[in-house]
Image (cartoon, rainbow, N blue to C red; front, top):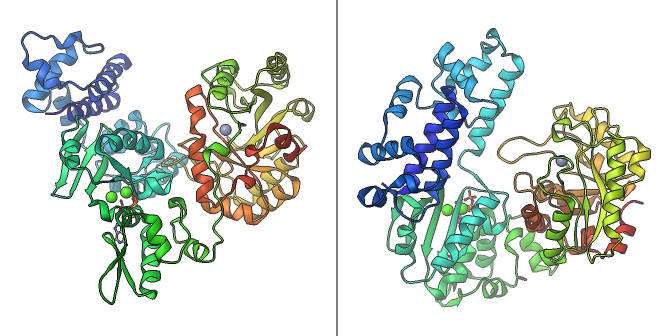
Length: 564
Ligand code: DGT
Ligand code: CA
Ligand code: CA
Ligand code: ZN
């Protein structure tokens, strides 16, 4: 048995222990052991088989875990796990993945109703049976139903940062290029597609210590899962002369491919993953690079982010594709948190990291007071902190730090802090963090009122979605976008991989309605600051050029172009 599988068994045991109400320390020790083993290059099996070695020498592996490991290797399980599996249904683990369902609830549901499948659970909620229990109500029933719907929709999809990390590890090793939805920059990815011409790439892939559960292995394709999260990876061998054609085909999207093939047929060609061929005599016309294929079809090169069959082929034909924004166009980051609210670093540390990335300016935008859990700032603290931040600029460092705030938009659209305090800050992001399920008309009014506040420069994470977890809140987007354009309030493109908000269709719509954009990270830690490139990917998917994005401007022009 390989490490990733052992790690999965330990992690699942931790979940079961949580349902069982075990003490948090034991649970954490199983989780820590799982993550240690999953990332460990040496095989657990080899260490245990060596009488000269003692596995408890490894940090985080105590006597208890060591004995569980021996059992797992011998028979795939161990007593504590057996005992819990006998008491709870195997689907208990699946239920924990439903947003809104914690271990305690899963346990109660089992004890009271013997709920063993998601269908059972959905039926109980529909029949309103849960509200009969103490501490459960109609709200929870509704939440669980939504959670189940989400789970079914998103099951098996992964966030872009996770998939990018896996791609960054495997691609150089296999001499491979990522294709599929990752290359198109989609915000979630079903499986990772890699193409390579390197001789022994499939063997290298299957032998990788974190690769497990090979699903299919042939002479030119291998599929398997990677790491404890189990992301599926498809690796395909492609002859060099077909690499461009294969890249084109496996980048997709499917709809784009269909449209591109129609274009080929119209010109008397056939297009497949091996190349572009003349129909009359089957001569290969192109195939080594994507650029030569697009050119042979009379098209400008179509960047992968645009390949969603949303008019890109037409535009490539008429030379009207936009010059897309690139990561190096970004000069500042206007949304980040520090220890002053719920961030993990000081503003000095954030500033140093931003400077390292080459930014010319940033805004420090901690939360406002109604987010009490995040230790949000009231008027007095906001103004005092702003003074402290401004002080930082006095020494004239190359990076300019703006004093700011991510101010909550209250339920009725008023700002969380007084206008007077907001007016003292350099940069105010206005965001919704509460009452997200208002009726669309009420939410629209709320946002319209927020935009009226003269200090507000940008709407933060404008739809509030959390990927794989929570839908966007509903409002009349066009109405708000028109008002934002008229008032000079920008839309944020939030680069946090959990949000990526706005998404491409709304970016395009907002631009049509005259809006400008600011790409920010919403960083809570210095290492999050490099996420801005995910926001740039969203902007590219939304057909934006640098000129649509205000924080591509030098500071003075940036300040002049935001509402003031
Ligand atoms: P995903 O994995 O769900 O995030 O999305 P994709 O786009 O990566 O989809 P995937 O992995 O099934 O296939 C990769 C690409 O291969 C896809 O974007 C287009 C191409 N492709 C796959 N199957 C077909 C097909 O049946 N017809 C056409 N035209 N293209 C296909
Ligand atoms: Ca894929
Ligand atoms: Ca695939
Ligand atoms: Zn926020």
